[in-house]
Image 1 (tube, rainbow, N blue to C red):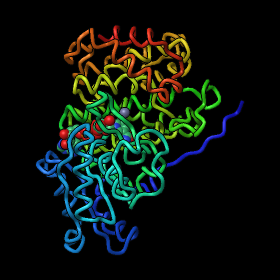
Image 2: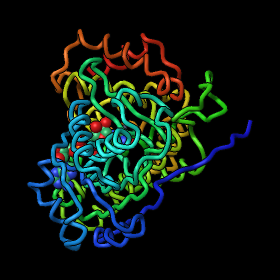
Image 3: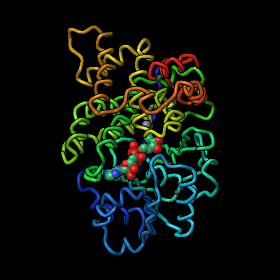
Image 4: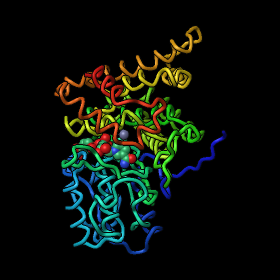
Length: 403
Ligand SMILES: NC(=O)c1ccc[n+]([C@@H]2O[C@H](COP(=O)([O-])OP(=O)(O)OC[C@H]3O[C@@H](n4cnc5c(N)ncnc54)[C@H](O)[C@@H]3O)[C@@H](O)[C@H]2O)c1
Ligand SMILES: [Zn+2]
């Protein structure tokens, strides 16, 4: 069966070194006189990234801006409530997220709560945001999550021990402003790990099921419809860019070409996964990352080769194509040899970047694996779109191999 598919992005995507200087003109195009709430975190204030953005703005705009700098990595529901209280007191007409995925997601949830009221948990899951939010601007400072163009916002729920996603077309920002220069102060570890998150997005999107191959389509539609040609094109672009630029961006933080290419890779990977899919790697990372307090990118990077190996039998051709994109295939290789080379290349990249390759290296215990397998198994939207349908035992075996 031929699939029909559609494709979404941010309302407007502005990309380029120095593009932050255009923010004021884009702001006035969105709204004549806005009251802005800028959501960020103390590290970005200290690293000078907030100043990098503010220097491009006139005093009129700055007077109408309040800064909430209480964001945190992998934000909790409690921090979302604090940001929402700030929004209540300032009553902004525009909400802007400056940071990695954490601050952009926090800005998204704050915009939802500010516009529609209630608690974060009222909106967990797919399609539960009842309508548009106030205009939302996303300005990434990592090259990783693609949240600037995605329909997702992730919070950490300490009560259930998993990360919870709010997924809605209304969470795609009105404006995504991607200025690669804002990633220059990004610490080495964050550059490496968020870059591997982008690679995971691209590989999971490229190897996902097609919409017509789904076994149990959800009645109200799915946040992850599956593989489609435009998402594939975005994923391919991202994989090629990451293979050629992630190591350089990590080792030479001021390398303009590498930073630009990684920023482009993260955004294209965001377009790929948010119109295609993320799958089993993300499902396993959500409980594991919560328990081990590792970054989302670090958890994904560690799990990615193991999930690729599990999916290999059903995605041999796609993985061989990924090997070509990663630059590790040669004409003399069989399809299977190429596919195996792709997995090996991801492992080597992790090693080169200094990302731990075993769960125990992140402080995990073997007796935790069963609980994570069960929690991942329960995230049906991610299980269903994975190319191979895992049993609970399969999940445990994947985790065990990664242990
Ligand atoms: N919404 C989505 O589509 C989506 C997709 C994937 C992941 N996520 C979520 O995004 C979060 C991870 O985001 P991330 O990987 O971008 O990292 P992050 O936003 O958590 O940032 C990590 C750390 O790096 C610091 N930092 C970020 N940019 C910096 C810079 N330029 N200079 C100095 N310090 C900087 C931050 O202050 C923070 O302490 C997780 O919560 C994850 O679940 C969201
Ligand atoms: Zn991710």
